[in-house]
Image 1 (cartoon, rainbow, N blue to C red):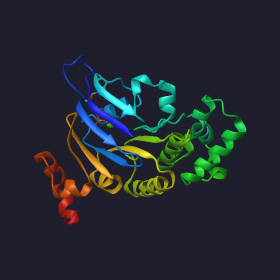
Image 2 (tube, helix red, strand yellow; image 1 turned 90 degrees about the vertical axis):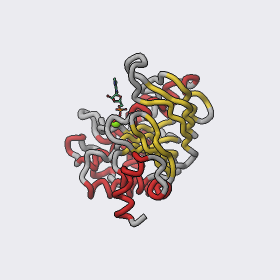
Image 3 (cartoon, protein in one colour; image 1 turned 120 degrees about the vertical axis):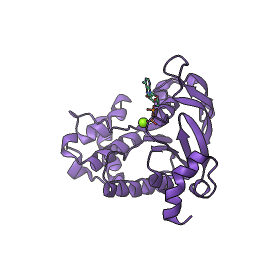
Image 4 (cartoon, rainbow, N blue to C red; image 1 turned 135 degrees about the vertical axis):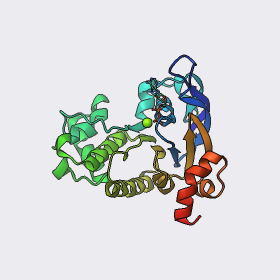
Length: 247
Ligand SMILES: Nc1ncnc2c1ncn2[C@@H]1O[C@H](COP(=O)(O)OP(=O)(O)O)[C@@H](O)[C@H]1O
Ligand SMILES: [Mg+2]
């Protein structure tokens, strides 16, 4: 479980806040979506969870312990992270990219190869065809799948995904979304998924937290947000989807 209490982040010593007093809990096995426009604080919030960004105030607990009290290497091993821009290493093959975390842990080459095969299978990129390729030889959607496989390599309990399908066309996004749903069913991960796409949020989120100017405007199921928006901002945001979905 991930528990955030009154979490805030200022990058300028308290003059302005990227994240303001956010409190929320992500239950075991849940997919929580952070939905908000660019600049609303989604990436900052996500990065504070695995300490890629240090908080200004408030608390973050992962598995019942404050992240400040956990060894940062062990913490990041328990949390897979999929970056907003894929961030594959261009000079490494797909297999090397997927298993870099395992190499850092001292896992043998043979075992890494086996693991890469499984992980690539999981994201529907058969190893015989893809393991030896370089990132420049992949489509955008394939590169994102490699990013997901890499995040899963150390068998983390948690997955943080920052607009993982953001830069892709709608057909590819849809295919990746359904792949993610399949993975989620099989692997039972606890996921925090960031997007600015309302339909993606409704499609993937067990619950959705709507972010605006660093705050959470409303947190609830898709249905609750569609039918019972709590603020004018949420009402405006969901008006069109509500019409389209007949909610
Ligand atoms: N490293 C940084 N230094 C200073 N300001 C930052 C930094 N990262 C993000 N910000 C600012 O914090 C706010 C939230 O940014 P971000 O968390 O990236 O939002 P989002 O992911 O929702 O687009 C923005 O105003 C952004 O300019
Ligand atoms: Mg972002």
